[in-house]
Image (cartoon, rainbow, N blue to C red):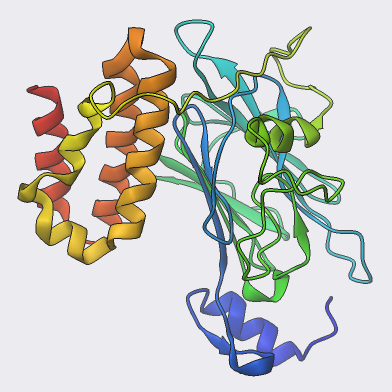
Length: 302
C-alpha cells in the first residue's frame, strides 16, 4: 500500500497512539483533526480555523501520489436555528468502493442504503455506535467520529503525514495551514478563514443541498467586556484541569468562544454552550469527569 515496511504499518494501525522515530530526530504522531461548534476546525498540526460556510467541503483527503489508498472525508454544514450560525449536519466518508454517510440521530447510509449499527460485514471498514458517537474505522487506520450534532474527529496513522489536504491541513508538523487548496498563503488576510474554507468546497450531493452557499467572515474585534461570558472557562475552580490539558489547549476553546460571542451576540448563550460542550469532551477524555460536569453546571447556572 505504501513504500514502507509491512510491520511498521501494522504497528501504527494496531497502536494508533504510538510515537515512532522520524528523520532528523523528530517524532511521528497520529494525525488528528477536530471540528466543533459553528464550526471551529483544529487542524492536524494544531492551528485553529474558524469557518462558517453552509455548503459541502473537503475536511481531509489524500493528495495525489504513488500510493493506492483513496479516501475523502467531507462535511456538509447547515444553518442552526438562525441564518448566522452554521454547524456540521452530516459527514461523508468516501472510500474507493463505498460512500459512508453519517447523519443526525445515529443514522448511517452505505452507498445510499440505510443500515443498522453496528456494521461489521465489510472487509475494508466497520461502523459502530458508542456513548453518543458513530465511529467509522477502516482496515488501514482511518477513524472518523461524528456525534450527530456538531462534533467531528478525523484520525489517521502517522504514515499519512504530509500526504493530506483539506481544511484539516497536511499534518506535516508545521503550523502553516493558513493556505487555500491551491497553496496560496492567506495567513495575513483578514478573510483568511473564509478563503481557506471556500477553496475546499465540493459538489453538494447531500439530502439538503444549498442553492447558494453563504460564508460569514468571523468577527474578532470585540472588547474583553463584550466577550466576558467566556471567561468562566479560566476560573480558578478549573486550575487542576487547566494544568492537566495545558493552557494552550484551553486558549483554543477561549478563542473559539470569543469569536462566537463576538459574531453572534444576539444568541450568546447558545454559542457559548457549543464551546462548553466541546471543552467537556476534552476534559472527559483527559479523565477529568468531575470538572467536565462542574463546568457545564457552572455555565448553565449563570
